[in-house]
Length: 171
Image (cartoon, rainbow, N blue to C red; front, side):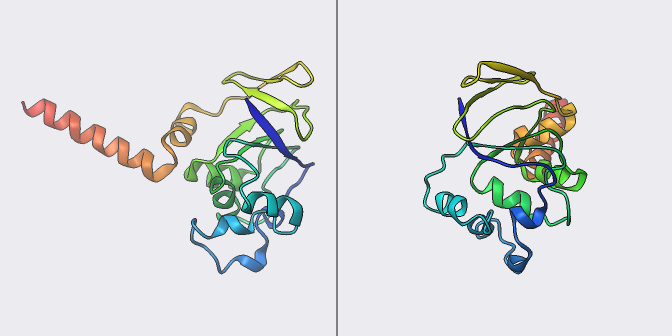
């Protein structure tokens, strides 16, 4: 079960997620401290550990619009958050996939802060309201990258798999 810790509307830009004034900070180990910096109460909860890994941000349409800054995804990944949105901006989605940030596309999602969600491959069950919502699954290749923890771990696994197959072929 995952708890909704923040509910946002449509067109949440990367500047809201990771304000541009912090762009000089690029290390994934440092970017999380600036997540939603202009929402000081939420930022404080993140930094103090009050928000548990696997917690959910629910948003409307076009989450992650705006600039192509990768830090917007890495800052959320740093807290191991899950983002459920009606849809995502294209560049944000690809950055998030490359970093292994868990995204769920759910066009009809209805949830409030504090709601408990059961997130399954094909649907989300809002345990608080007792409603179900269909999930639009990501293409298998993209989901495989997220499941591996991002593009670098995915590539590493693929290379090791290929190397293992070559060794077996020589035996």
